[in-house]
Amino acid sequence: MILSPYNAPTRVVNGRVVCEPPRKKVAIVAFSDTVTAVRRFQQLPDWEIWWLNHGYVMNLAYDEERRLRCDRWFELHPVRVQPTNDLRWLHICPVPIYVLDLNDPHPQGYSPNAVQFPRDECEKLFPMAAPGFWACTFAYQIALAIVEGFEEIALVGFDFATPREWLFERPNTLFWAGVAAGRGIKLIWPRDSTLFEQPFAYGYDYEQEIAWCKQGVNWWTKTWGYELTQQAKAYYEDQERRIQEAIAR
Image (cartoon, rainbow, N blue to C red; front, side, top):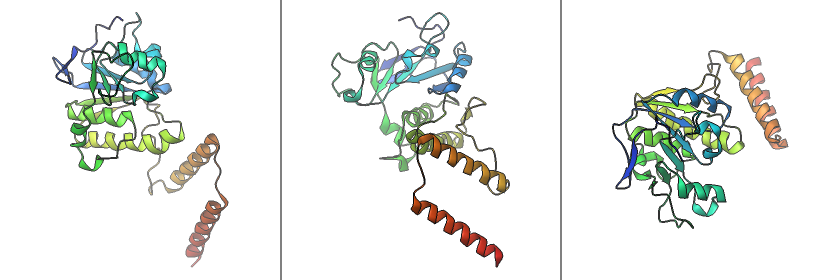
């Protein structure tokens, strides 16, 4: 597989990924519609690009000449749950690829570029994260970018659509993005991304914010095929009644 000439000069040394000279900007790529924004980074020589999982099937992982434009890959799932194509990618990946455990046997063997993800180092950033505040690969990626001293992080394609993604992975990603921002790291994302979407300020835009939240709840409930239980409906109706009684007094 041919690599893009814009790829960073990364290599694995003593179980760590080394880039010389180091780059200070990284685009972390997910799979929603806004992933098309990754094109703007592919010919920028001061940016790393990090892909994950089955991204190798996407045209956007390659430049216009079908050269892989990726500096590091992340495949943080046990070998036993990997489909055949992902197992093959673990075997042939031509750039450094992070895995959970190099001692987890791979039937064909790992790529020589495989490296064990340094979870312990990431957890030192924020002790409360241990042992359980890791809900997705994106959280690990952002934490690693912080550990390695990146100064700018682009979050591309981060629009969460499934119940698991919206309820667990999105808040976890936002937490680690907040940790990064709190350390002075610049965050950028596509203008039409829903990752940081909150168009109205709680309290200040009171009616608009309530209406927007209710609309979102109704949309997600319908989209996911859920319905409020009778107990939940009774609870909300009781809450509304109490509010109205308090106002009337």
